Image (cartoon, helix red, strand yellow):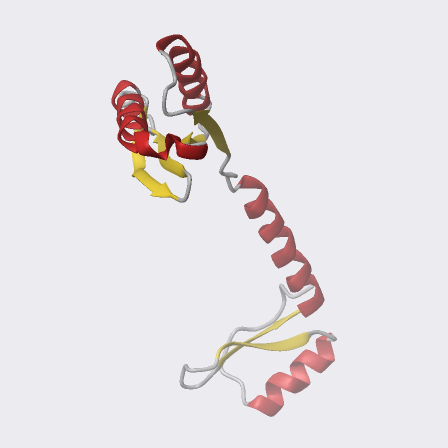
Length: 156
C-alpha cells in the first residue's frame, strides 16, 4: 500500500495532502532534524507491530529464579552436605542461590560459626558459582547470595 510513495522533500501542506490522498497518517520520525523527517504510514498497523515486537522481546527475556537454602549455626556435616548438593543442583540449573543462617533465640552468639559455614559453602561451590554478596548479618539472619558462573561458549 505504501510502496508507491515517492521519497523526497515535501512541504508540510504537500505531505499532509499526500497522506490524505493515500488515507494514511503523517508521522514525525525525527523532529530535531532540519528539516524535520516525517513518514507516511498506517499508524495503527505500526503500533500493532511495535506491540508484537515488544511481546516477543519480553518472551525471550530470561527470568531470574532465586532458590533459598537455610542453615542453622550448628548445622552438622551430613545436613550441610545434603544442602550443598541441592545448592549445586540449583546453580547448575541456572538459578541464583540465597544461602542463609537463621539464628534462633540466643544462638546469635554463634554468628562467627554461621559466617564460617557460609564462607565454606562459597569456597566449595566456587567452581560452579560466584559470590554476589558476601555474608551479611541482617537481624537474626546472615545472608549470602551466589550466582551461577556463565559457561562461555567456544567460538568456531
